Length: 334
Image 1 (cartoon, one colour):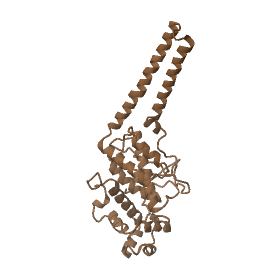
Image 2 (cartoon, helix red, strand yellow; image 1 turned 90 degrees about the vertical axis):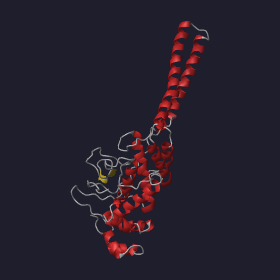
Image 3 (cartoon, one colour; image 1 turned 135 degrees about the horizontal axis):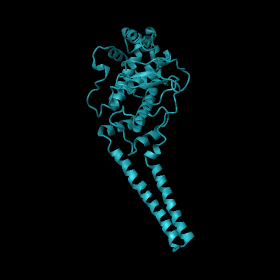
Image 4 (spheres, helix red, strand yellow; image 1 turned 120 degrees about the vertical axis):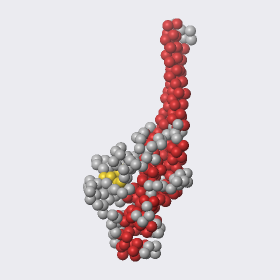
C-alpha cells in the first residue's frame, strides 16, 4: 500500500488484458469431464459385449469368450474406479476446506454476484466458485490452482466495482490476478510495472497472510490501478493525495461491506489505526466527497493522481470540502 513500483515505460494505449479467465479445467473440477469419460467407458463396455455376442456367438469359442470377458472385466473395474473413487476424492477435498476458507468463498461468490467481473465472465465464475470441489487454502500466499482462481476472481470483481464507481480503467494491459513475490523482504503491496505481455499488475505484500488481509490490500491497490503511476526505485511517485484518499475510502467501505460481517475484529492493517497519519488525513477529506462527484473529478483531471489544481478541485467539490482540504488533496502525497 505504501509503494507503487517501478516505471518501465509501458504503453498506455492498449486494453485491459482479456486473457485472464476462469480456468479452462473448470469442467473437470465440477465433474463433467469425469462424467463424460465414464459415459465413454460405458459405450466401450456395450461395444465389447456386442462384439462377444456378434462375432463369436452367445456361446462362441471358449478362448475368444475368455479374452473378451477379461477385457470387459477390466473396463468395468476402471469404470467403477472413475465413477466412484475419483469423485469421492474430489468431494473430500472440498469438505477439507477450513471454515475460514469456506466463509471467504461465500464472500467471494457474493462479491462476484454483486459487482460482476471486469472480463464479463460473471456467470461462469459463480458456477465455478459454487462447485463442491473448489477448495482454497487458508493461506492465500500458497500457489495452489484454486488459490490462483480465487485471487483472479477477487481482482476481476473489485476492478468491476471500482469501474462502476469511478469510470473505466486507463487503457493498459493489466495482469489478471494479484500475486505474491514469495520473498519475505517484499512486505508492502504496490502496483508494479511489468514486462512483455502486461503493463501493470498488483503485488500483495508477503505479510498479508490471510484472505481478509489480502482483500483489503487488493481493494486499495485496485484504485491505484485505475490510472497507474510508478517511479524508478528510490525516486518519489508524483501523485495527488486524492488518489490515496480514494484508495483508503474504497478499501474501508468494501471491507465493511463484505468482511466485517463475519470477521468482527477491526482490520488491524488499516492505516486508520494510527491517528493523524497522512493516510487518515487523505481519507477524512476524501470520504466527504460523494462517489458521483469523485467520478466527475477523475474524468476532468484525467485521473485521481493528476488532481493537482486546488482551485479547480474546490470548484468541483467545494460543497463538501474546505479550501484547506482541497489544498491537501491536490498536494503531492508524501
